[in-house]
Image (cartoon, rainbow, N blue to C red):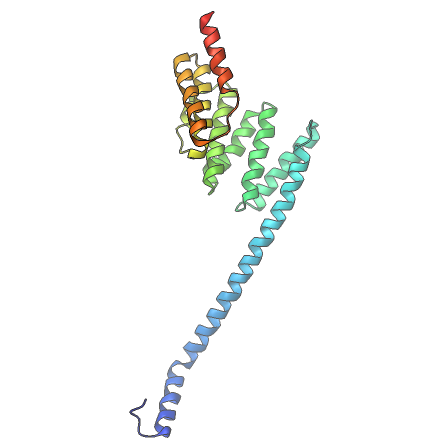
Length: 218
């Protein structure tokens, strides 16, 4: 614009530019403002969802942490876990509620219900550790239900290295249930080594090895 000969010419250029581009500029500013507003609204919605899910999850934990549960209380806990999973499915609390629901079901020997809840986490969670934990617990459910072969299949799923010792222990349990003692011993020894290497908590595996040795000695 320094090449223009007068202020009038500069003003005329500005007017023409505004006429050609003003509407799109205003629209762009409006869209940007709407985007910022929409982002904040989405953030507020997410925070509200998380807060509501947390409150419901605390209710579930307060109910299910009692030493014993009557049938009615257990049914209420199951219903509450389902509501959390359905209404707040994208939150951490949905996964945690399903894991808790599966634990209560397994304690009662309701392996079908435990499978359903664990499968939802294993197949649908975006959180690697919780997804791995669900695969691991599904394998344990199958062992308890008398399906160790299925448990071994589930233990081939991609399970987080943070649970590698528990994975090896469960594999040993499955082999033991199949009376494959040598493979059970190898898996349990691997579990102990992994626990020591990665500083992972693991309890009772040495007792399983000792019992296996005692049975063979008889």
